Image (cartoon, rainbow, N blue to C red; front, side, top):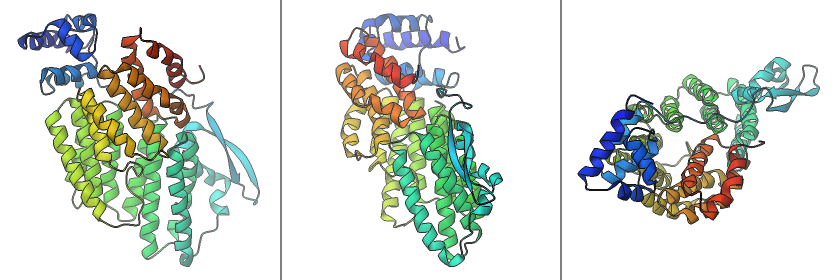
Length: 432
């Protein structure tokens, strides 16, 4: 029990009675059992961060209850269900004598950069260094590969995408050594984007340390090329890591540092403001969250007016990221009914080919409906995509799947909830 726990219950009771609400009425509005709320009020049970945010929203307390527990118990990122020594892949490598062979790499080795490890087998020596005049041709092929990797990342587990990105990162590193002039900047930009996306895939695979390794690599490549903006975007990426760790203060801090950097492009400013909004939502601060979302929308609209052939920074599969993130934030702010209304509308705009994005926001949509008491609809939404959860293998999505399973468990007597039990077990414990 945390040191804030004895204070939370009495404070909740004090706020409830001050507004003339009975225990039964508050429980009904929150869609929690009367017994659950009672145990929290007397200090017999710890409140979850979600419970505190729901109470803040219902009692209009401006995040006061969330603040009592947020600093002492951040929501953990679930540990990935894998063994680094057993979950590996085989990669074909060129040997120094010009032949080829297959070598095994442990899963973590692939995440960090299996292709870089292959240098010891003569891979780098075997790859011809392209002449400067052909750099543009090489770059166009690499851009196609990068776009294909992004597309694959929407439908496949990150473990299938990361080896491709690791190989491309090494190839771009070689290409950059002999590229000069106007092509050098384009090679560096694509190299940075590749490392950034590898970092996201590593986070999707459930390894925050490896994600940080790739983020740092992106910054190093960009710094060598004189690109100051990559370090700023790295702050946005780090804010995403802390967001999934449930650390509101760190998320807000990283996002604000990104927005304070000099000459930051509007795209990065918009993504940083969007991440800041999610941090405020975790902290239960509705007013600051909405302000940050307004800034995000303004910056991203300005970014759309700019023309660029470079790969898009951040998501490229969600047409209106601010709108779907608004729905995301409303859920975290304890306003599930409003969140469901926004997500019901916005998810329809996401292309059906963007499976990972659909499932990510779809699970959040189901969560919102479940928290708002629309259990049957939440179950129908969950049933439509639970099979895809295992296919795309996202550790971050599993965070919300666990939350959804726990939320629906409050209605264990509902037939639709019971029917989903095996599907949740399969998604959360593959191979068990």
